[in-house]
Length: 352
Length: 171
Image 1: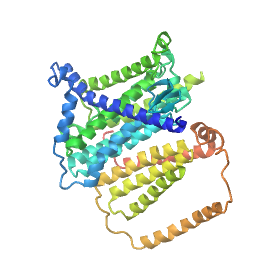
Image 2: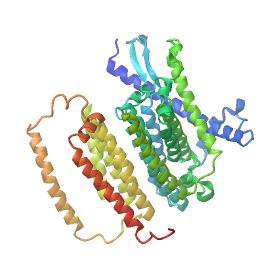
Image 3: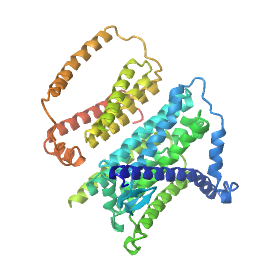
Image 4: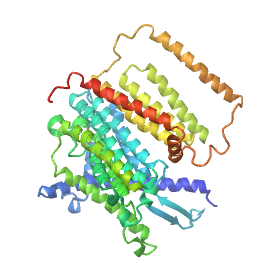
């Protein structure tokens, strides 16, 4: 029996979503481990190295521990919102991955599975190539605010409320710079589609890091602020707000907040690689044999993403936190004008 | 398939708007309004208007509603404050009925087969960013500029109002 092409397309999409979710969750799990090991490295200590070889089973142990912890809901909390807030932040963080291209086209050869004949099909290593890809990403990041804001509000605790309010103000402020910093790239590419942005960087010297260095700096700073990472983690700074918006959370709900924080870090790193470092394009691709080129490209993309994840951790353990007025001043008085300037410079560059 | 998606988004949109009106807790109202926005974005998406759909999410669900939520959280309004002025309910019913009439008239005119949508769905590239951009910067340039100036005035006005009386501090 020959499989209907439409069903086949749907099945391929499902398989891709499954693989992607698996990769993202595994990366998130090992990112927490990497964070602890790298912070230990920076602080000249050992870090967790007891569970399994080199401590590699530590994320598993953490997961089991989270599951067995007591689920505590404060008596005065708004129970419904308290329960859905972690999901509201996790879902947009995961949805971003739908438009990130991991690699180019691959051809699946025809084969037979349980008596079903499957024809030869070509598919791209991206779940959906939206015409408005970049805008979709900005939309998802803007929706992610609700999880933090509601998580902070629903616990009915002044520290969590302060964390929630801080986060909504901070994320709105930095979203502007984040969006405007990409405009230069959009002007040079002439499209919002992720595949076209990657296609515009197919040779090494066309990578947007060389053509849009200022935009890259703005993007990285704004992305750090959007993810509430140090030096912008005023949303959850321990010394002032106990734990910020997730103070009252425990068990799996708390771990969902952690997972979404790390998932959005992975998404931001993948975006940095895609927008500024050529996506899945690598130098010397034409020297690699045709059978291995896709593997080389995907490995390159993962390597770039991994590098930016390392930068995230590196920065966290190197820079002190900003004061809140400084944070707002940088966002509105420095990054936003610089992002506008970048748009103007790009416009002049394109005309000359 | 398309019908099921339409029904899903339509029912979610109508149900959340009704729930929003009946809800007393302002935070829930905001959340339900966001659900309305997102389901309307879903309807736009089904009409091949990807750009409008995403802008709906970015601008309304992502930016404006966050400000609503921010203000409600900042003032910590947990329940509807008293003093709802008395004629609000009859007035609301009257205005809603007045608004409903032209909409109903429009729907009835379509139901009679008055106008059919173009067979090719508006042509290649319909609703895509390129086409909207071209239209905005050629045919509708003047309205866009006027809207931009209006927004600028609003921004400057907001800054002036908030700085009133505090200008001399620290300067």
